[in-house]
Amino acid sequence: MITVNLRKFSWLISVFFAGDCCSQIFPPGDSLTLLQYDTIRIETEGKINRFELENKKQFSFCSQLYDLPKDCEASELWNCCKYSTNVYEMQTQTSAGSVNCLNAFKNGYNLTWFYTNDISDAKSMIDTMLNQFEKQVSSFKKKEIKCFVLNKEFPGFLCEFTYSDNTKMNHILTYGSFKHYNFSLQYSTTGSLKDTNDLPETVKKMLAFE
Image (cartoon, rainbow, N blue to C red; front, top):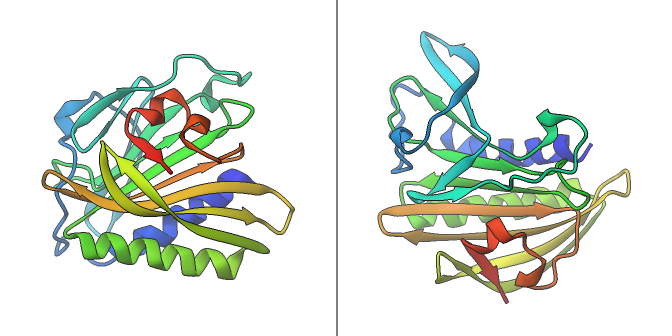
């Protein structure tokens, strides 16, 4: 149920990239040459192919490489941590990325980001997400926080959502820029989220908050 909810939230952000992919001006993202990918799925939209790519060892964010956790508490291998992205055949860079460790640990997590052409688009993504979340969940709490992404300070929100099935999740939502990248970033977990110490070691290398 939690995985389904996260996919819905990712879809909410993806509406900003909706439209004819041939006329889409893709924002600066991570070069596809940074990592080796497995192709999980190919879908055709019109006459254009879209590829779902996956890496189970590393992920890239703002051209920085990070190792995925090697340990996994899940009994099935496919539930362990993985990084995935979707690209059209004409793309040489990613427009988004997602690290899914939601079912890999008792208090799993998901980290999702989208690159944008300017920082105002990234802010609009976060604003739209918050508005949609508040409408769709049964309980919604939000407070403003300071986020530090790659050691740069940006505005952010710490949120607690309760879904209709009484599932609770905590979220950090922020947006910012690093070098020539503009991004929105969402961290979600079923565990506690009171300060940076509650973040997993992999995430701490790129994100902190207070």
